[in-house]
Image 1 (cartoon, rainbow, N blue to C red):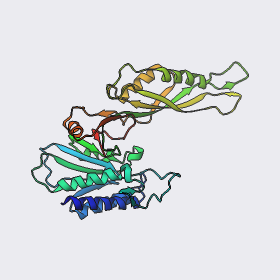
Image 2 (cartoon, rainbow, N blue to C red):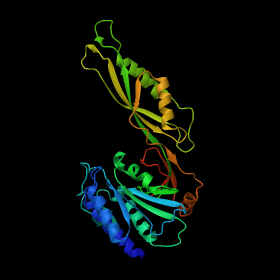
Image 3 (cartoon, rainbow, N blue to C red):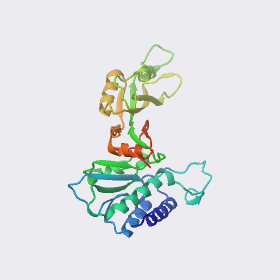
Image 4 (cartoon, rainbow, N blue to C red):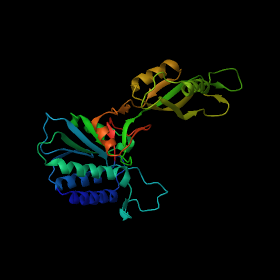
Length: 315
Protein backbone atom coordinates (compact mmCIF):
# COMPACT_ATOMS: atom_id res chain seq x y z
CA UNK A 1 0.00 0.00 0.00
CA UNK A 2 1.43 3.43 -0.92
CA UNK A 3 2.80 5.36 2.04
CA UNK A 4 0.82 8.48 1.19
CA UNK A 5 -2.46 6.57 1.43
CA UNK A 6 -1.36 4.93 4.68
CA UNK A 7 -0.48 8.31 6.15
CA UNK A 8 -3.78 9.91 5.18
CA UNK A 9 -5.78 6.92 6.41
CA UNK A 10 -3.94 6.98 9.74
CA UNK A 11 -4.66 10.70 10.22
CA UNK A 12 -8.36 10.22 9.41
CA UNK A 13 -8.51 7.28 11.84
CA UNK A 14 -6.97 9.42 14.57
CA UNK A 15 -9.57 12.12 13.98
CA UNK A 16 -12.36 9.57 14.40
CA UNK A 17 -10.81 8.30 17.61
CA UNK A 18 -10.58 11.83 19.01
CA UNK A 19 -14.26 12.43 18.23
CA UNK A 20 -15.28 9.35 20.28
CA UNK A 21 -14.85 9.53 24.08
CA UNK A 22 -12.88 6.48 25.23
CA UNK A 23 -12.38 6.65 28.97
CA UNK A 24 -10.90 3.54 30.54
CA UNK A 25 -13.47 0.73 30.89
CA UNK A 26 -15.69 2.59 28.42
CA UNK A 27 -13.80 2.24 25.14
CA UNK A 28 -16.47 0.35 23.18
CA UNK A 29 -16.82 3.01 20.47
CA UNK A 30 -13.12 3.42 19.75
CA UNK A 31 -12.63 -0.36 19.78
CA UNK A 32 -15.34 -0.64 17.12
CA UNK A 33 -13.80 2.18 15.08
CA UNK A 34 -10.41 0.41 15.05
CA UNK A 35 -12.06 -2.94 14.30
CA UNK A 36 -14.00 -1.52 11.34
CA UNK A 37 -10.95 0.33 10.04
CA UNK A 38 -8.87 -2.86 9.95
CA UNK A 39 -11.70 -4.89 8.44
CA UNK A 40 -11.97 -2.23 5.72
CA UNK A 41 -8.31 -2.93 4.96
CA UNK A 42 -9.07 -6.67 4.67
CA UNK A 43 -7.29 -7.63 7.88
CA UNK A 44 -8.37 -10.79 9.67
CA UNK A 45 -8.56 -9.77 13.32
CA UNK A 46 -9.89 -10.68 16.73
CA UNK A 47 -11.58 -8.79 19.54
CA UNK A 48 -11.88 -9.55 23.23
CA UNK A 49 -13.77 -6.95 25.25
CA UNK A 50 -12.29 -3.69 23.96
CA UNK A 51 -8.97 -5.14 22.81
CA UNK A 52 -8.30 -5.61 19.10
CA UNK A 53 -5.45 -7.69 17.72
CA UNK A 54 -4.30 -9.20 14.43
CA UNK A 55 -1.42 -11.17 12.93
CA UNK A 56 0.21 -10.47 9.58
CA UNK A 57 -1.36 -12.40 6.70
CA UNK A 58 1.57 -14.79 6.23
CA UNK A 59 2.24 -15.40 9.93
CA UNK A 60 4.71 -18.27 10.40
CA UNK A 61 5.02 -19.78 13.88
CA UNK A 62 8.61 -20.79 13.12
CA UNK A 63 9.67 -17.13 12.81
CA UNK A 64 10.29 -14.65 15.65
CA UNK A 65 7.41 -12.30 16.37
CA UNK A 66 7.36 -8.53 16.93
CA UNK A 67 4.41 -7.07 18.82
CA UNK A 68 3.21 -3.55 17.95
CA UNK A 69 1.13 -2.31 20.87
CA UNK A 70 -0.49 0.88 22.06
CA UNK A 71 -3.75 1.81 23.79
CA UNK A 72 -6.90 3.64 22.76
CA UNK A 73 -8.33 4.60 26.16
CA UNK A 74 -7.82 8.11 27.56
CA UNK A 75 -8.11 9.95 30.83
CA UNK A 76 -10.96 12.43 31.23
CA UNK A 77 -10.31 16.01 30.06
CA UNK A 78 -9.38 18.34 32.89
CA UNK A 79 -10.92 21.71 33.68
CA UNK A 80 -7.96 23.54 32.16
CA UNK A 81 -8.81 22.55 28.58
CA UNK A 82 -9.08 25.59 26.30
CA UNK A 83 -10.29 23.57 23.31
CA UNK A 84 -13.14 21.16 22.70
CA UNK A 85 -11.34 17.91 23.58
CA UNK A 86 -13.47 15.93 21.12
CA UNK A 87 -13.03 18.25 18.15
CA UNK A 88 -10.00 17.23 16.06
CA UNK A 89 -8.40 20.29 14.54
CA UNK A 90 -5.19 20.77 12.60
CA UNK A 91 -3.19 23.96 13.13
CA UNK A 92 0.33 24.58 11.87
CA UNK A 93 0.71 20.90 11.07
CA UNK A 94 -0.40 19.73 14.53
CA UNK A 95 -3.52 17.69 15.22
CA UNK A 96 -5.22 18.71 18.48
CA UNK A 97 -7.74 16.72 20.52
CA UNK A 98 -7.99 14.49 23.59
CA UNK A 99 -5.89 11.37 23.09
CA UNK A 100 -4.09 12.69 20.02
CA UNK A 101 -0.78 12.45 21.88
CA UNK A 102 -1.45 9.81 24.54
CA UNK A 103 -1.56 7.57 22.76
CA UNK A 104 -3.57 8.03 19.56
CA UNK A 105 -0.68 9.29 17.45
CA UNK A 106 1.50 6.33 18.38
CA UNK A 107 -1.39 3.89 17.95
CA UNK A 108 -2.35 4.94 14.41
CA UNK A 109 1.33 5.01 13.43
CA UNK A 110 1.73 1.41 14.59
CA UNK A 111 -1.48 0.47 12.77
CA UNK A 112 -0.09 2.02 9.58
CA UNK A 113 3.18 0.13 10.08
CA UNK A 114 1.29 -3.13 10.54
CA UNK A 115 -0.76 -2.52 7.36
CA UNK A 116 2.41 -1.77 5.40
CA UNK A 117 3.77 -5.22 6.24
CA UNK A 118 0.46 -7.08 6.50
CA UNK A 119 0.35 -8.74 3.07
CA UNK A 120 4.09 -9.02 2.44
CA UNK A 121 5.51 -12.50 2.00
CA UNK A 122 8.90 -13.88 3.07
CA UNK A 123 9.33 -11.50 5.99
CA UNK A 124 12.06 -12.33 8.49
CA UNK A 125 9.62 -11.67 11.33
CA UNK A 126 5.96 -11.99 12.16
CA UNK A 127 4.04 -8.90 13.23
CA UNK A 128 1.18 -8.77 15.71
CA UNK A 129 -0.80 -5.59 16.20
CA UNK A 130 -2.59 -5.05 19.51
CA UNK A 131 -4.77 -2.01 20.18
CA UNK A 132 -5.46 -2.40 23.88
CA UNK A 133 -7.84 -0.97 26.47
CA UNK A 134 -7.66 0.12 30.12
CA UNK A 135 -4.02 1.18 29.99
CA UNK A 136 -4.62 4.39 31.90
CA UNK A 137 -5.96 2.49 34.93
CA UNK A 138 -3.74 -0.61 34.73
CA UNK A 139 -6.95 -2.56 34.17
CA UNK A 140 -7.03 -6.33 34.04
CA UNK A 141 -9.20 -6.16 30.91
CA UNK A 142 -6.50 -4.45 28.90
CA UNK A 143 -3.31 -5.96 27.46
CA UNK A 144 -3.19 -8.40 30.38
CA UNK A 145 -6.47 -9.96 29.21
CA UNK A 146 -5.15 -10.87 25.76
CA UNK A 147 -1.45 -11.36 26.49
CA UNK A 148 -1.61 -15.16 26.31
CA UNK A 149 -3.50 -14.93 23.02
CA UNK A 150 -0.56 -13.02 21.53
CA UNK A 151 2.19 -15.44 22.52
CA UNK A 152 4.85 -16.28 21.53
CA UNK A 153 6.35 -12.77 21.39
CA UNK A 154 10.07 -12.18 20.96
CA UNK A 155 10.08 -8.39 21.00
CA UNK A 156 7.64 -5.54 21.49
CA UNK A 157 7.43 -1.92 20.42
CA UNK A 158 5.02 -0.06 22.70
CA UNK A 159 3.75 3.28 21.49
CA UNK A 160 3.63 6.17 23.98
CA UNK A 161 4.52 9.88 23.71
CA UNK A 162 8.32 9.85 24.04
CA UNK A 163 9.36 12.48 21.45
CA UNK A 164 10.44 9.48 19.34
CA UNK A 165 13.18 8.57 21.80
CA UNK A 166 13.42 5.05 23.24
CA UNK A 167 12.56 4.13 26.81
CA UNK A 168 14.74 1.11 27.50
CA UNK A 169 13.84 0.55 31.15
CA UNK A 170 11.03 1.44 33.52
CA UNK A 171 10.33 1.11 37.19
CA UNK A 172 7.55 -1.16 38.36
CA UNK A 173 4.84 -0.17 40.82
CA UNK A 174 3.41 -1.58 44.02
CA UNK A 175 0.69 0.17 46.00
CA UNK A 176 0.63 -1.13 49.57
CA UNK A 177 -1.95 -0.52 52.29
CA UNK A 178 -0.58 -0.90 55.82
CA UNK A 179 -2.74 -1.45 58.90
CA UNK A 180 -1.34 -0.48 62.30
CA UNK A 181 -3.32 -2.15 65.11
CA UNK A 182 -3.50 -0.61 68.59
CA UNK A 183 -5.96 -0.62 71.49
CA UNK A 184 -8.56 2.06 72.11
CA UNK A 185 -8.49 4.10 75.31
CA UNK A 186 -9.24 7.53 76.75
CA UNK A 187 -6.64 10.18 75.98
CA UNK A 188 -6.81 11.56 79.56
CA UNK A 189 -5.83 8.27 81.17
CA UNK A 190 -2.79 6.04 80.91
CA UNK A 191 -4.51 3.38 78.85
CA UNK A 192 -4.71 2.03 75.32
CA UNK A 193 -2.09 1.53 72.62
CA UNK A 194 -1.94 4.35 70.08
CA UNK A 195 -2.06 2.97 66.52
CA UNK A 196 -0.74 6.29 65.18
CA UNK A 197 2.49 5.89 67.17
CA UNK A 198 2.93 2.39 65.75
CA UNK A 199 2.36 3.74 62.25
CA UNK A 200 4.82 6.61 62.80
CA UNK A 201 7.62 4.20 63.70
CA UNK A 202 6.87 2.15 60.60
CA UNK A 203 6.70 5.24 58.41
CA UNK A 204 10.05 6.42 59.75
CA UNK A 205 11.59 3.08 58.74
CA UNK A 206 10.04 3.35 55.27
CA UNK A 207 11.36 6.90 54.92
CA UNK A 208 14.93 6.05 55.89
CA UNK A 209 15.41 2.51 54.55
CA UNK A 210 17.70 2.04 51.55
CA UNK A 211 17.47 -1.27 49.70
CA UNK A 212 20.92 -2.87 49.46
CA UNK A 213 20.86 -3.57 45.73
CA UNK A 214 20.91 -0.63 43.31
CA UNK A 215 19.97 -0.93 39.64
CA UNK A 216 22.51 0.32 37.11
CA UNK A 217 19.67 1.56 34.91
CA UNK A 218 17.00 2.64 37.39
CA UNK A 219 18.82 3.48 40.60
CA UNK A 220 17.22 2.73 43.97
CA UNK A 221 13.82 1.37 44.86
CA UNK A 222 11.74 4.36 46.02
CA UNK A 223 9.12 4.14 48.79
CA UNK A 224 6.81 7.06 49.61
CA UNK A 225 3.95 7.18 52.11
CA UNK A 226 1.20 9.13 50.35
CA UNK A 227 -2.00 8.57 52.40
CA UNK A 228 -2.69 8.21 56.14
CA UNK A 229 -5.97 7.93 58.06
CA UNK A 230 -6.70 7.43 61.76
CA UNK A 231 -8.79 8.61 64.67
CA UNK A 232 -12.45 9.44 65.25
CA UNK A 233 -12.37 12.14 67.95
CA UNK A 234 -9.85 14.16 69.92
CA UNK A 235 -10.10 12.33 73.25
CA UNK A 236 -10.01 8.73 72.01
CA UNK A 237 -6.72 6.87 71.50
CA UNK A 238 -7.11 5.30 68.04
CA UNK A 239 -6.88 1.55 67.73
CA UNK A 240 -6.38 1.66 63.95
CA UNK A 241 -4.20 3.63 61.59
CA UNK A 242 -4.09 2.96 57.86
CA UNK A 243 -1.40 4.34 55.57
CA UNK A 244 -0.52 3.76 51.93
CA UNK A 245 2.92 3.36 50.36
CA UNK A 246 3.69 4.11 46.71
CA UNK A 247 6.68 1.90 45.78
CA UNK A 248 8.61 2.28 42.54
CA UNK A 249 10.54 -0.94 41.97
CA UNK A 250 13.62 -1.72 39.88
CA UNK A 251 14.91 -4.60 37.80
CA UNK A 252 17.12 -5.97 40.61
CA UNK A 253 14.17 -6.95 42.84
CA UNK A 254 10.99 -8.85 42.18
CA UNK A 255 7.95 -7.12 43.65
CA UNK A 256 7.39 -10.12 45.90
CA UNK A 257 10.90 -9.74 47.38
CA UNK A 258 10.26 -6.11 48.27
CA UNK A 259 7.04 -6.96 50.09
CA UNK A 260 8.83 -9.61 52.16
CA UNK A 261 11.53 -7.13 53.19
CA UNK A 262 8.89 -4.63 54.32
CA UNK A 263 6.98 -7.29 56.28
CA UNK A 264 10.15 -8.25 58.13
CA UNK A 265 10.84 -4.68 59.24
CA UNK A 266 7.57 -3.04 60.23
CA UNK A 267 4.90 -3.87 62.78
CA UNK A 268 1.86 -2.92 60.67
CA UNK A 269 0.07 -5.48 58.53
CA UNK A 270 1.25 -5.17 54.92
CA UNK A 271 -1.32 -5.70 52.15
CA UNK A 272 -0.23 -5.07 48.54
CA UNK A 273 -3.07 -4.19 46.17
CA UNK A 274 -1.29 -5.96 43.31
CA UNK A 275 2.12 -7.41 42.44
CA UNK A 276 1.50 -7.40 38.68
CA UNK A 277 3.47 -4.33 37.63
CA UNK A 278 7.07 -5.52 37.65
CA UNK A 279 10.00 -3.44 36.46
CA UNK A 280 11.23 -4.18 32.93
CA UNK A 281 14.17 -3.37 30.70
CA UNK A 282 15.93 -4.15 27.45
CA UNK A 283 19.67 -4.57 26.91
CA UNK A 284 21.14 -1.25 25.81
CA UNK A 285 23.18 -3.22 23.24
CA UNK A 286 20.10 -4.79 21.63
CA UNK A 287 20.11 -4.45 17.83
CA UNK A 288 16.86 -2.45 17.90
CA UNK A 289 18.29 0.04 20.37
CA UNK A 290 21.49 0.36 18.36
CA UNK A 291 19.47 0.96 15.19
CA UNK A 292 17.55 3.74 16.91
CA UNK A 293 20.75 5.35 18.09
CA UNK A 294 22.14 5.23 14.55
CA UNK A 295 19.02 7.14 13.45
CA UNK A 296 19.82 9.90 15.93
CA UNK A 297 17.34 8.84 18.60
CA UNK A 298 18.15 8.88 22.30
CA UNK A 299 17.51 6.38 25.06
CA UNK A 300 16.13 7.12 28.50
CA UNK A 301 14.78 5.28 31.51
CA UNK A 302 11.42 5.86 33.16
CA UNK A 303 10.82 6.28 36.86
CA UNK A 304 7.09 5.81 36.35
CA UNK A 305 5.16 2.88 34.89
CA UNK A 306 3.46 2.44 31.50
CA UNK A 307 1.74 -0.68 32.81
CA UNK A 308 2.90 -3.32 30.36
CA UNK A 309 5.50 -6.06 30.50
CA UNK A 310 7.36 -3.96 27.98
CA UNK A 311 10.54 -4.16 26.01
CA UNK A 312 10.99 -0.85 24.20
CA UNK A 313 8.76 2.21 24.04
CA UNK A 314 8.80 4.77 21.32
CA UNK A 315 6.30 7.09 19.75
